[in-house]
Length: 253
Ligand SMILES: [Zn+2]
Image (cartoon, rainbow, N blue to C red; front, side):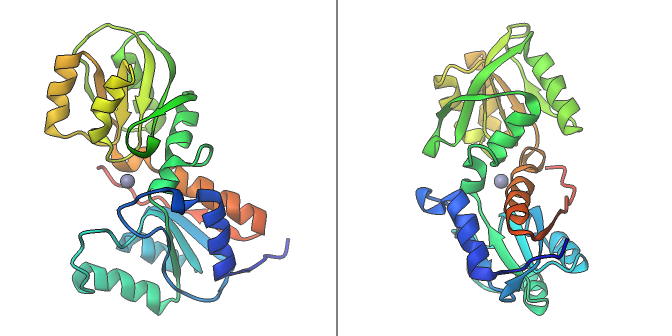
């Protein structure tokens, strides 16, 4: 099949139409973060616009990189020095467009990080909770939090961290939010969850779990956010006849 190409702004319009970034209050700009060549034929997707991913995109002769974690975040000091210079220099030297979508990519109801993680674990979203309704709640049927934890370890192929104060209590109502959503734990408890799954844990969540009896599982920020970017990029690339490849840069966090 002859490969198609598309204009940069048209591709941006397709991503925006799908992910609707205007609906979110986010920590950085969503959409085109770094302008590259005007015509795009090959898209590489990945989780984070790290130097390793940019190098891999260059090796794959990508015209565009589509990521969940882009380069620019609120609170940065704005100077293009050190690691930022290294990343930007590579993108600009190879004229690679960088598209980044943060919360809109977590939230998309079928292709987003939360939906795609739930799909792999057999959890269907019944309701939303937390800031901007990013968290998902669904029905589950685990004998206890340890069974949930081993299911996650098997699906994600990594160790997870479980704080399960209530021992053998069944998990019937599960709440989840990918990435660094440990701050959603109280909202998950208020939503009636027996267990909450996210990427990372901080010190306060251990106490909250012990004191409320709701299990907390930290399954990895990267591991829980590996699925949204390739789902969106392959969906769009397929519709437009573009080449697409997901490149996973391993990350233990
Ligand atoms: Zn994240």
